[in-house]
Image (cartoon, rainbow, N blue to C red; front, side):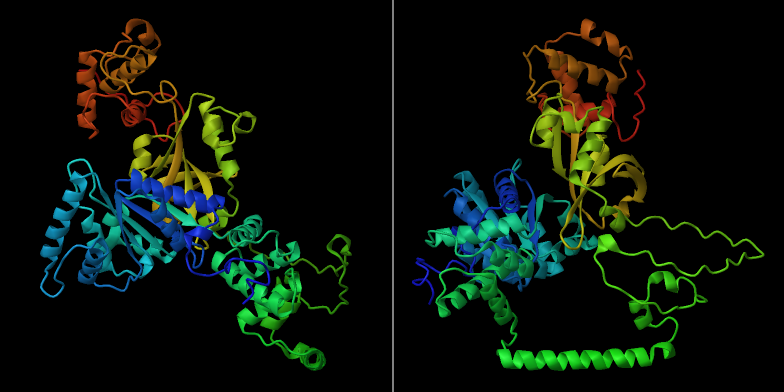
Length: 575
């Protein structure tokens, strides 16, 4: 109705997940990058979570549009399925012929395996996207996990993306689904838009629809953000109704008054006339005055611990059951001019026996998370490497690290992985509202982690931290050179000396570290290759005799060379 009035080609704020209108905020860009990584590189599940209306489905459709033609995608939007119905729906999406009435689970798996192997042989990849996955049953999720067992000797045949609301994280943390949780290699929690992004989002969709200039005033956009909390779907609903209101009132620009009326209509609130509004205001005022009089009349008859007294009296007055409540005049003034009210001094009663000290309750992790900040975490991590984070050049933390010869490692894993790398890590914890918090794990002793939050250290069990941890962590390590090289037979450089040094420590061959550079050969020969293969086999790495990032990380972690470490490694004894 309003498109012609505002000179638009289409309605800009439709709530259908049209990727053509996708606004890539920083958060949405990161989420899309995680999905693309999962499809192109990830060997396991990809998990995307976010609150209702934050744009998860739109991102999935945008992902599908960006995938090459050699990728076959099955998008399942209805999670209310049984395991057999899930397989049937997957077959329908991939256009695989099947007989739902007579197929057994084995028939489905055998047919799917044959299809995927054929697709793999002609360089085609297959992706399954499960939307609204928080509504999947345990049985269906277990069936989904079993589908990842379809693989060749070096590659998964089916890539699976789980998309859902935050409840999906809690569902996956169940003990019965721990096998599935361990296979998640990339995950991202999508947050609502910021105030700045909300303005850009509104103008972006208007521009796509043909608007030649912004139609919403800044005050109107601020009101939209306040009542939508940055959730794209709510922004669309409010803005669509506001444009309709502007059209009805023959306005060429949407101001905050039109947005306010749109919000009332969206919420189902009635818009009263001036007369009825004035009448309602008078009635409300009289009712408030009457209520206040009743409260004052019955003030002293209320119990000492009454909710109303807690509501109106200063908490200081309720600090003791024997405290007297003295009525006093209250004057409302600006905070910077609050007068100091002298209170009567009560005599201090000294007990005849000293009270027993109550044990100090340890701080709760959820409360401490409010003190965290990403910058503070990186400042602490760089300090552990004896570096000043704020003085280093670079926009990103990993860019600053690279100027000092350090590399970043960002992984999704478990405490076993963190213990394996043996380096302090930046841990990302996510609270129920989707807010991300970053802190440092400085030490890890058995199942107790020493955390650093805003310069203070605290100890918590890993089980307690798991309530907020989705598996993401970042650490710094020191490769022999940057960019991280790939070392094989025939290469001659300082990185080969680095490899020999760490192997000698792990094998217990020598303790004279300071003489290694002058006594060891910088050439990667066949004998060194055999030592590398033996090391890779022992620690279940790809035993190809080529030293890349994974083998280097293992060498550095197990040798215990350099600081900082999560724990000290006992040197191997020489035979």
